[in-house]
Image (cartoon, rainbow, N blue to C red; front, top):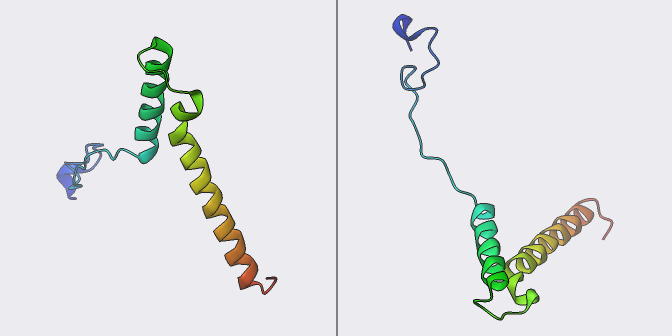
Length: 81
């Protein structure tokens, strides 16, 4: 960063490294669920709706486990458990 690049909004001119945008797991999960729903609605697959939304149920289960672990850890930390 020197006087020649002062006042510019270009990250490369300021010496910052450009990085690729990161794709989150939520994006992949959303695409999988949307693809499953489209396949079900178009009649290509005859899956049950429970099976179509399996990735969502798995995520809900994992998030629930994480919440339980965090709550138990905090209770143990405060000696309530």
